[in-house]
Length: 307
Ligand code: NCD
Image (cartoon, rainbow, N blue to C red):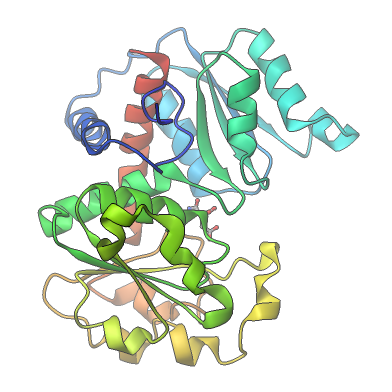
């Protein structure tokens, strides 16, 4: 049984395509017809032990739109600063009778540790380098809308692949939905071991490249990633990263037709993407991703809580 068949959502590795499609369909129907009382009387606990703007607020907006009460806990202002562990914190919040635990942690595998220790459904909101399933689901939501489906589509994911939970979850999600993924990055941040990320049966859907210019025109979508400095990757990149791998204004000008340019945020302007590209390139869908995220997370919350 994969994590998606339980009420927890720990990752997209091994996910059943139909389950992903159900979540995306539910998100679409919520966007047009959300009653506002689906989770009335329920409590969603946001346990965010790593910094976040979009994901934390998006879960809060999603839960609020469904009528739930949201409890927000971070490492500052909680007893985590006194040395209490993530699992102990989660078990204490669970004992208060909350209906779902949304967990972000710097520890890869941290969400699964919480899920093992708790009977309350756990949603992984990003655990270290491991997975960030709701980000990949919202990316799939936008890509399906923009491209009319993912079967046979080509998606390039560019940047700090080594440290990216967004890249890992997207590889699993996009490949499950029939897309072909090319991971692109400097050799220090992307080595051949990434071929082992997916089972042999779908290995032809995953490629590795080190030259962004060789994949730019053929990709239906390009997803730019931030250098994860908090995971010490700044030591591994060349100072000319922008010139070699960045979505500069010159590169972005080569995009055409219905090609889509994504970024999960936060963007480091002038590093992986020029500010002018973010602000005014017509292929950029960054704020569409953010908007979709609230409905995708609403669908994930309803599924977790069993409503
Ligand atoms: C990503 C994350 O936290 O993994 N951001 C997000 O959730 N929107 C990507 C990043 O931090 O670079």
